[in-house]
Image (cartoon, rainbow, N blue to C red; front, side, top):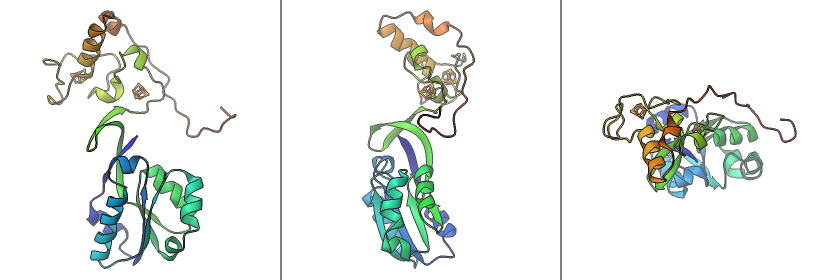
Length: 213
Ligand code: SF4
Ligand code: SF4
């Protein structure tokens, strides 16, 4: 999922400085899992905006903010949303833009999307994919070298690994040491990891239209 963190409130207030009437939108998908765009986060934002002297015309947690069909259904036709001068989005950039295309008013981000990652438990998220466009997990024992190695080394390790920890950040496991341990535990050939991984085609489409690719 897309992991997000809250923007500093001062920054949000600065971005909506010319406006008085605000509508707040959260996202029931990724941002709810991150607790950055759930009912609680939306409530907190509403209270903070009111404390800053703004009028909040309403708020809503959409099922999935990046679904433009829902943006059209839930926001474009919403009376309180239409009554606002600006919409503060507690969603990722895709959600913010999806809502932005469905209304004829400014839509401003309240969150910073930081990575695609996993939920270890609520409050603990780790980057596990950098959306590189050519997945090679089958060659790296299921550990993503691009996102989990500090240097993104596709042919690693770098030689700086110390006791299985990364030389860039000793609190983190070296991704290549993890691969080695995983292969060994599974009784698989560890030398499979020493094979050269050729340059990959990481060209990524900007859009996917079924039947066109
Ligand atoms: S290899 Fe690429 S697509 Fe696969 S998990 Fe890593 S970044 Fe994501
Ligand atoms: S120590 Fe391991 S994780 Fe850290 S940069 Fe080197 S290969 Fe990558």
